[in-house]
Length: 215
Image (tube, rainbow, N blue to C red; front, side, top):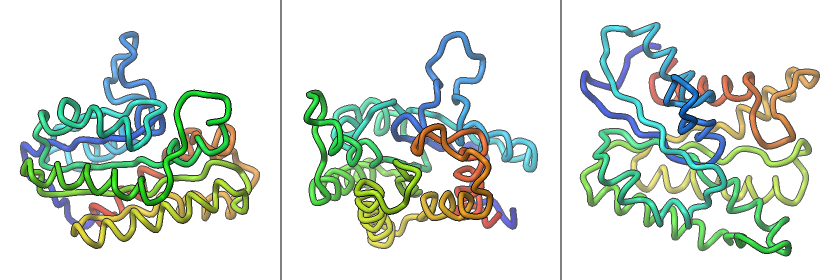
């Protein structure tokens, strides 16, 4: 990593759905960051820069769409007063298009997704959170041409544009995962096309560190 943008004492909050969650709330686990890309980022920062003392918090919740994120935003974001806010959300907003006929959560259309995401950022900005990292939503199926993966690509475009508008760091996690899949198709990068395996989480962690820290 060329140069860390953090300073000692900075609090970095990670928000999102199951891909961020990764069991961080499991009382049987010692690691309160879960077993995914958030924990990997913590480990790499600690190993390479032990002198930089930052606090990393995981508040991802499995199954969340932007709507659920908005509902818990005060308690799980604003009240925590992070210096840095990293958001990875959108997979469930899209996924529900396939499952909403079964009942439960509804599909979040692209315009509503953008409005919800913008509200998250506006509230965070008004609360004094200065630095945003927006991570693209990642694939849903193994085939990039499925209807849902095409929708994810469109939602990724929303995230990229919001990053531009809010002077945020954009992390192209979806693009990096497809590159990894293409380069080593025999390796299982996701469990079922959506949830990353350990190598898949490593791709997201590496993409985050590259975008934020120049690694």
